[in-house]
Image 1 (cartoon, rainbow, N blue to C red):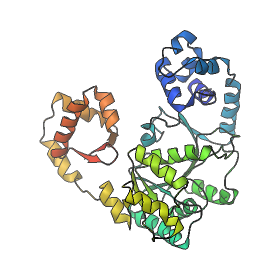
Image 2: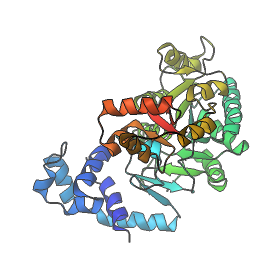
Image 3: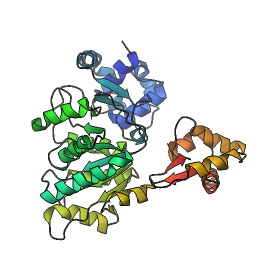
Image 4: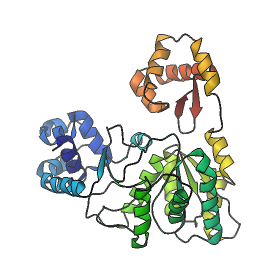
Length: 366
């Protein structure tokens, strides 16, 4: 039995810990198992960890429940994505409040080059159906991974459009794998998995689709993606919550403007007016903002053949050794250089065609 996995699952079950504190505890103690073995007085030295949290860790008998969950995972062929493992979604990994564990039904590469979220109202109109199917179809040539929440309305049409256009799609759930919600999408869920996509959740089995779980689901959608498309939304709703979270994560948000006066265009129009979303008319708008159309790779490779790197530049380039796209936070953490120095190096590398800046404080190796 994998102790890291067992204790990682157990840590998610301790009341009052949460994902942010769980990461602090794991980092301080050196692993999930070590958290449960650490002395109380040492835990008190961790910022944000108080007596109440420590009491929960010490007193909660969660290991037996975690063992049951492992058996459920094995019986149902579920993959566990631990946040420190390479198969965990890298984009989500950089979000401070990302779940330390995701459960996956189906086995998909969640770290492909382009990941797009598509969300919107459950009360989708005929106009919204047309927009959803059209934008997903237009993005099929970009080979994007389509992420949504398996809800009624826009989510359902986004997943179906992805399947129709032979795109891989991932559905993020607000409950455990003992059920599928809404039940009407059970066949859709099966098709997603059978086509090479996956169902994802941070919840253990037995967790029901309660109201408080949907905003948590929305943050996972927002964290996994490069950009978010809001098709239709009323002035309030889950799609706007996802868009707000995406903005806090520095993800690009796109919204169809809709028609003035239509109830399910109000949310999109407001986001565009407030500069919280880019106006979207077709896939070319996304390609331009995301700079997917840039074709600098050949030039950049030629440039690198004749360029000498300084020791500090080499430190930065080492961060890109196993990844083509890296977040600024990771560059700062891995190089231990000052933000000012890194900014200067990145600018120089960008001028010379070695790197290019992407939306969301990310850099791509060319």
